[in-house]
Each structure stands twice: as structure tokens, then as C-alpha cells.
Amino acid sequence: MQKIFIAGGVSIDSIIYLPEFPAPKPQTIHHCRFAETVGSTGSGKALNLCRLGFDVTLHAMIGNDPYGEKARKMLTHPDLTFLYDNDVSGTERHTNIMNAAGERISVFTNNVSENPGIDYAKFNRLIKESDHVVINLGSYTKKLLPVAKTEGKPVWTDLHDYDGLNPWYDDYVSFSDYIVLSSDNMPGYRDFMQKMIATGKKLVVTTHGRKGSTGLTENNEWIEVRALDLCKMADSNGAGDAYFSGLLYGFSKGCDIRKCMELGSIAGALCIGSDLLYHPSLSPGLIENLHQTHYEK
Image 1 (tube, rainbow, N blue to C red):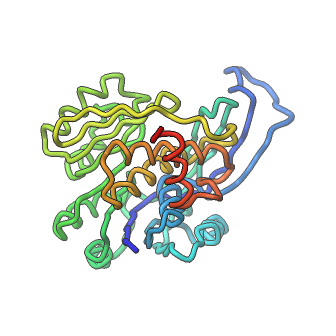
Image 2: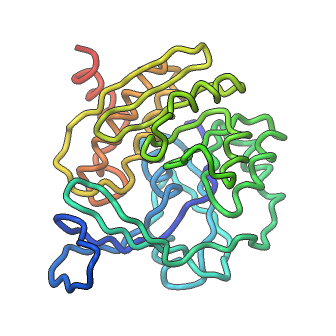
């Protein structure tokens, strides 16, 4: 069983489901579907990857509060070790407004501390003992990027809706070897991908939601993969992290990059059929069987 270390990204999310986003005017909405659950990118990746056969260690900052306790309970799986440090700012919280198309407006209602006073020395061993290292965007995780390099570990990162301009992302762009991002805020994503490969990245993958995904390998091979429609939309939260997890699963098995991206598409398509950050039936056998059905015809 391969080991994965994931740094950063645990929150408790309040999710409001509406048929469509409300108009920008004062109003009262009397009925909606509502859920409160664990969220954010570290949770999403960890909960998918442990179900895909990895020994996962996730570290995050959470508060000594009821939200932190809820996060600890929900991040429970035999193959998932959740390590955390106390954040004096409390557990990160988001309020997500979802429409019927799965689009999201996310409001960060409580952020983690910018510079938490934690012992970073402990991460050297965790990173050294891992087969794969995922450093998520976050206030404290930037300090782990050079640690991974010191330990000789390639870094995977998810830039999410990066626009290619915000300097806050620079360290992640610079240190990462494998990059996944969304094209939502980057219409010129192909230029960005080419620039990344030219600077020595091993793989860059850009996702486009229902329009599939685009990959560029270190050998300058462009790969386009179509999205799948496997499930009726229940909740799109976590779909990007599920895609990332399927991609990394394929990579860990030595699959070619096209198949890795196709496995990512399958995991993402399954995720939207669940109110959770993962599909309850997710397993290596399921995504391999679905790959045979939908991509190997």
C-alpha cells in the first residue's frame, strides 16, 4: 500500500442548495436544502484517496471547538490518519451556495491563522516516509514546500481557480512538480501550461468541469479527455479533488497519462452523484471497471 502525505485543507462547510443563485437584491428565501459537513481540498483528496487503496496521512489546522470535533469524526477511515495542530483562530468554515447546475458561491466565514506557531520539524519524517506528497494551498503549507524538496520528494499541488497572476501562488507554482488547476479563471490556460513545462514541470492538467480536461506532459504531448455523465447531480463539492485523486491513483499504478486523466474523470463524475466529498462506492475495482466500459471501447 503506497503512502500519501497531504498538507492542508480541512473545514466545516454549511451548504445551501437552491434551484438558482438568488438575484442581487434584498429578499427572503423560505425553503432550501441544507447540510453541514466536512469540506475543503485536503478533506476531499484524503477521503477519495483512502478509498482508492492508499495509506493516507492528512495534516491540517483545526480549532479546539465543536467544528474541529466534527471534522475529526468525519475524517475517519481505516486507511486515513488525520493529524492536526490547534488553530487559535478556530476551525476553518465556509458557507457554500449551490445551484442546480452544481455551480458554487463560496464564502469563507472563518479562515485559518496566517502564521500558526507549530513545530515544522515533524513534517520531515512524514514527507520522507511518503511515496507521494500533496501540498495544498493554505496559510501554513508554504513552509512545507522546501521541506519536500530537501527530502527529495516531488510535489503535487492543486492550484484550483488560479488566474495566473496572483503572486500569493508563486511558491506553489515554483516548487511543484505536478500541477492540477481549473480553467475557470484562466482563459489562456494553454499558454500557462506550456510555460510550466518549459520551466521543468513533469505534468500539468487543467480541468474544465463538464468540458473535460487537458493535459500537457513533460514530453510536450497534449492530451484531451472528455468528461463523463455517470450520475445525476447531487452536489459538485469535492469533484475537483476526486478528479485529482483518480489522476494520482492512475499515476501510482504506472498508467499512461491519458488513462490517469480518464480515471480522474471517472472519480469526479462519480463524486457529483453524492452529497459527500466522494462517492460511497468508490474503489479501485469500480473505477477500473468503469474505465473499461467508457474509455476502452
